[in-house]
Image 1 (tube, rainbow, N blue to C red):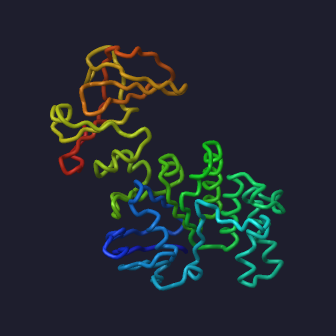
Image 2: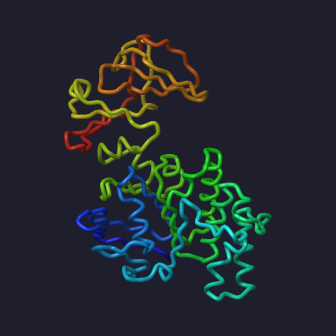
Image 3: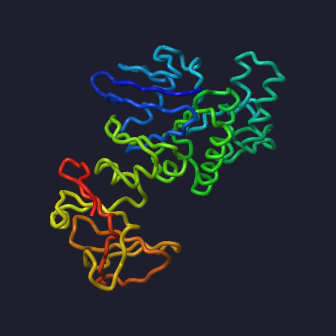
Length: 336
């Protein structure tokens, strides 16, 4: 079991409040992802869970026991950092074995655990190499392997893929997802600013804003039923189109949102008309930017390739039930 309960947690540095009344239950074996803009407190919350930051007020419990004052090494937690934090003078085997050695584990136990972790992460043939002889993705796998051998109750990941190129991010993301499937008893908490990582890895996502929880839910719950204008605009890539002024007034709202994939270009009779100002052909998709006189261009996702001349007049129609309406406090009203 590895259930976490966070109750009324605050974190302050002097008079500056970083985390404000955080309340969150994380289920045993769950993959929870923290997302939010830079400075929202997601990494600070992760470090509070790890014990690397003291909690100013509130409680953190693991399996029903309050661990506020418990040392990081005694919380049953392993953390994987963005910077890998490998010992450059040690080979892969010794990096992965180091924590076990300082715990006075036997040589046989160390060998068994390191060998099993290396096989799971496809690192067996690299055990004799130094970190400088590895790619970024391989180094990150070593960092994960070093955590695995400790048999933690909870895995903490602090933006572990941000130093990797696009192809390695995809590969390592798949490996982390597979790792979660093979370690069902281990709870994983993952901090990222990457939408794709959050949507594809998480059982649930916790959206943070200005040190407070904005919404918690499954990826599809947040995507389909955002409970605030902030979540609507933050979850999804590309982001939701958000319109105010006359466009929103006509639909009885302060702000109207619609996702690019829920818009269609039609010959006539659409919800809005406007001029094409830009087009991005990506092969599988095309994004058409249309000026309808709103505060920002409307982004329309079209399947496959498309060709629209700059300045061409087009009509844009929203799919039924896919227009999100928000009041002036940023709370959802209804859909249209």
